[in-house]
Amino acid sequence: MTRPLINRVPNKWRPRMALVVTLVCASLLAVPSVAIFALQFGTNWFMRETESALLKQAAIYASAYAQAFEATKTEADTATPGYYLPPPIRVFWNAEARTFNSLLDLRVNTIEPTRPDAVESDKTLGPRYRQIADGLKTLAERAGRTTLSSVVFVDFQGLDLQAATPMSFASVPEVEKALRGEVGAALRWHSDADARWPFLSVSRGTGFRVLITYPVISSNRVIGAVYISRTPRPLENYSSQEATAFLTLAAVTVLGALIIGSFLVWAVLRPLLALRNQARRVANGDDTDLAPLGHYGIAEIAQLGDALLTMAGSLSQRSKEIAIYTNHVTHELKSPVTSIVGAAELLEDGDLPPETQRALAATIREQGERMTRLLDQLREITRARQQVSGQSSHGTTRLSQMLPAEDGLEISVNSDQATLPLSLLHGRTILSHMAQNARHHGADRLSLHWNDRQLIITDNGRGFADVDLTRLGQPFFTTRREEGGTGLGLAIVIAILDLYGGTLRPVRHEEGARFEIFFPGD
Image (cartoon, rainbow, N blue to C red):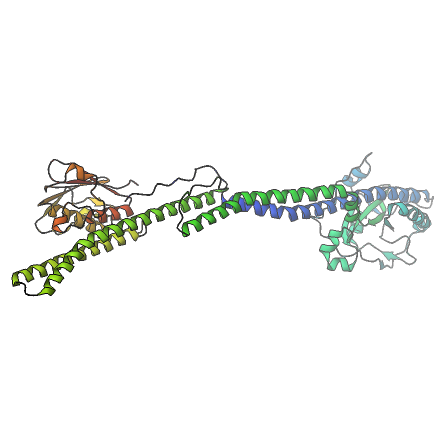
């Protein structure tokens, strides 16, 4: 069979559909992901900024606290109250300079419930603490107008210096930590409502408070602590201040979306629409001027375009073949039909000798049988060509199992172990037609020689003229037309071999006929 000649799609590198989908999904996810990351980063940054400010404020408050406490010492005060610092902590607090690493991180620390209230205690404040309480309160009030921080001063027992009755914060984890000589830190919800709707609260940047507890140290003892807190600066305030930056980010995002959309239109939409239009033209029977598109965008669409052009070429070739077969069948059937009609008319006239009637009846029978053979072989070649390529090409069969039984023809094989890449049914069909072809051309011996991927078939019949070698295998071409040949035997063989990628080639031979069948390699 002659395969259609098609302009193949240029084999250039193109991104795969999976890559394009991945890029699109990543791009679409990038916008909310970046926004969430920016929100978290901004909120975390404000939280750490607040933490750093509170540490500095607490250090100043603690220094004022310790200085005021030491100023109240009298000769009667022989011992300093509070937890005695162990050596490692004592070295840290006695250093000339102290630095603190960040203690809090929104991605790591859990936001705790709201700050618990102080609880009543049976302990009492010492006289020295009562003496300095009012001064510290005044300091906190004046400084708080600028720092906007809330400050609580506690003694070494955790008692609030400003409480009218003994109230203790000693059970609060961050306070307990400060009373042991370490800086405590915590994130706590601003209110119960914020705790119930944590996402909205965190996104606003005002739903939680940063709390720092700073130890007050005198004579290597923790005489108390500064419990200070503040809400981080709202993210909205920063956003209003950075409106230009946000507008720039929005513009970049929109531009990125336009670029992605344009790429998808160029790489996917336009090629698909062009292929759709080509497919419609093919469906309408117009296969003229079909050619590869200027670009296919991605590899899968290029493959689709290649398949479309191949399909269009195959349909065009098949349509032409159908037209040729129709013309040939009409021509081939016209002769026997004419003979049958003429014989029938003569028989209808009557008064014919018996011998003439028998001759006319024989003509009708012979021409009818010829028409039957012609139609049967047409059906056979149609079935062969309609099989799905590769469906029957799995497995191999021994050549000795395919040999046909043709009366008056001796068939020999060079090896009983020879195996052909054909199914048993197709192998028998091919060899049966080859054997019949040899027998009809006067052969009584047929030789089969298998050599790797080549099957050589020779016979000792009359052979073919050189001028006919190039026409053998064309449908309806026969050198035995007077003997009832249909010219479809070799066409059926070629149609079957085409399923396996094989080819049939007639070769000039000094004695008889010679055919060579080639099968593709692995």
